[in-house]
Amino acid sequence: MKIWYVGDKSKALCETCRKILSTTFDYYDVPLEKRDGVAKQIMAATCDDCGTVVAIPPQSMPAIRMLVRSPEFGD
Ligand SMILES: [Zn+2]
Image 1 (cartoon, rainbow, N blue to C red):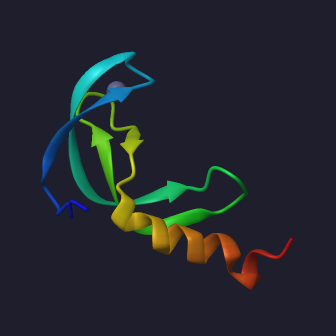
Image 2: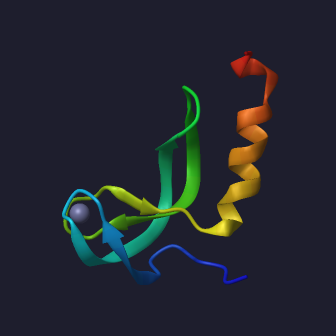
């Protein structure tokens, strides 16, 4: 799997801008999709145009999975 580092550039579809735009990887706080909560400081790519998080690389998934299962969120 490709490991991304802070400042790496890529391209992705931004749903906010509705087009393919260049993105920059950095550590961000990313809201969880399936439940309330925020994954703090995980590697993600944001749209260079609007700043929306548009991609989360596989390397960040273990951290998110751990958070989703974490008891502090309860069920
Ligand atoms: Zn955008």
